[in-house]
Image: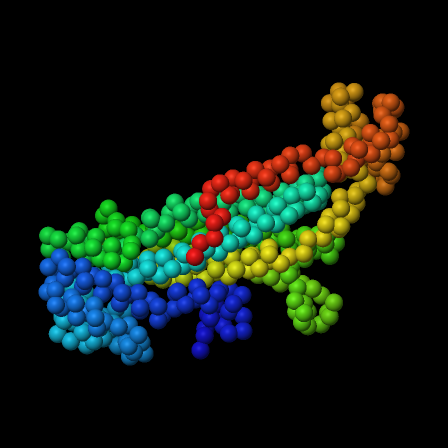
Length: 456
């Protein structure tokens, strides 16, 4: 029976994906720990630390799929140890060769390195989905490069922009996130096999070679020195995960606001039969967007717990270490849901260009006060023009008067300005600045980075 929301049958997929949950499942945790034990035995056999025939037997016979996880769990409860029952089960599988299982290693060697193997699979999923989302953002930015809309500051209408420009800002963020993932990958995906306090003493003189070969077999990087007491690798990963999640939460919140009935500039994907409310049949709620935005806080809080693990007593303790077992899966699982949700939203959302245009015109030209000020400034001087336009803008707003006619009536207005000039100044399409050009530049930079290529 599931007791954590990420495993609930009814709503679990709102908080994680089946693919990512499988990575962090108890069965896969056991599988990866056995994989580390087997790689260790293979490396020790090759280097002569244990008999070659024993190593070969372990490689051939150790099979996590045949282990009874229920029995292992019962023994673990009795022994008050999370790994020893697994070692006993492996020893039975391997017969006499089982005496050489876990030779020279400490529990944290196996658990840490197995966790990194799980993280490697999670990392690949995150990198794949972040890349796919960046591709989707590039497509939407290009499609709406010239779609004019209101740009807002402090929640209020500010100046015209384009929807493509807004999305290009998100794309540029994701290019940086993909760059960060590439940069931290070798540091995050580093194993740790060096004995009780990382001095290799139990492995004999070939300790560093045992670690190197074991991690080569597993396809992980080898540390310069043991990191049992240096937990920054997982914290660095968590930091980048928080940045990615933060962008996703921001996107969700922004689109949530743009979907408000009063704004109505976008709508999240809608499918036949989707219910918005149990009591209001008309509702088409932003459920996907709320879900996207809602998971940033749990990722952030889980990352805070990961950071706690950096406080280590002496050479090793379990007080901080165990926090990673809780937080690392949650970070990856929540982030997987956000990424998949965002891909579906960006790919399938409706952009209401007509409503965007209506919202641009909602204030009767006041949105273009800056444009008017700079144009008048050429005749009156910039500071004088600001004073004139401010007075007219406030009168138009407070008295609900036409902005152009209010300008015309001002005593300092230059009457040589024609209606065609005024109309051109007050057309938002004429005041998009370099927004369309910057969309081109962001997409070109993203493509030049090579990070938008689809990865398996």
